[in-house]
Length: 166
Image 1 (spheres, rainbow, N blue to C red):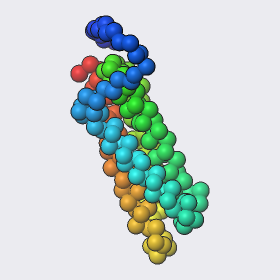
Image 2 (image 1 turned 90 degrees about the vertical axis):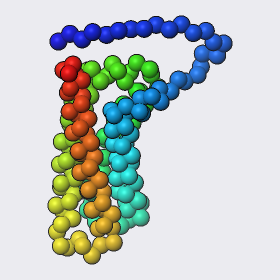
Image 3 (image 1 turned 120 degrees about the vertical axis):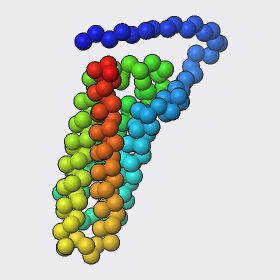
Image 4 (image 1 turned 180 degrees about the vertical axis):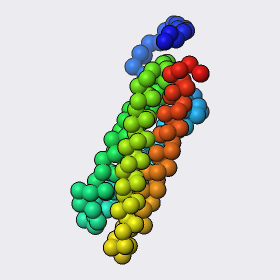
C-alpha cells in the first residue's frame, strides 16, 4: 500500500542549537488527547496498586492484582513514550499514525487491559474480599482499566483508519 508523504523543509538559524521544540499542538488533536487520557488513567491505576503494595495491604499476591498492575505499568510506559515522541518532534505525530505500529500497539493494549481488568473485577466480586479496606480502591482501578480499554480500542480504530488512509 502506498502513501504520499509531503516533506517541508524550514531553515532557521540560531546561535543555540540545544533547545527542545515542543509540539503542543499535538495535544489539541483527538489522537493526542486520547494518549494523554490513557496515560493519566494508567498512572492512576499504577498509583492505586503501588499505594497498597507499599503499605503491605495487598489482597492478591501474584494474582489478579499483579496482572492488572503489570498491564497498566506496561502500557502506561509505552503510551508515555509514544506521547513524548509526538510532543518532541514536529513530524512524528503525523508519520507514526500512518504506520502499523500504532494499530498493533493499541490493539494489544486494549485486549490485555480488558483481560486484566475483567480478571480483577471478577476476583473482587467474590464475597470474601468485600471486608477489606482496599476493596473499593481496587474496584475503582478495575473500572478505570475498563475505561482505559475503551480508550485504547478507540485509538486502535483511529490508527486502523489512518493506516488504511481513510
